Image (cartoon, rainbow, N blue to C red):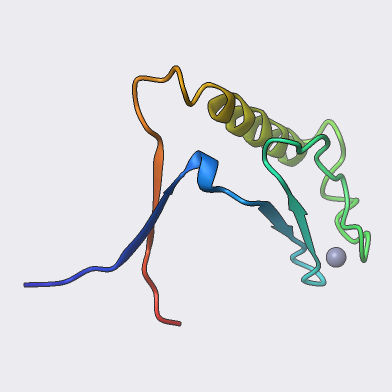
Length: 92
Ligand SMILES: [Zn+2]
């Protein structure tokens, strides 16, 4: 028998969506309910500006993710399903 650890939570368990700059490692955290704007660049090194033009596919992906997350959170009470996210229980 294999025992597998997992962490799970619902959308209203999310404390923050954290964007971590791949260039400098700076973290930008957003409360998913109050998240207003997707940053076009890293607040620390500004190194992502060439990859995140406002009309780019990458920027659109983050905007879509933010909108879908906020829509799902606002509909949690009326949805017929509980949305549960599961992650492996790692021991790193
Ligand atoms: Zn950065």
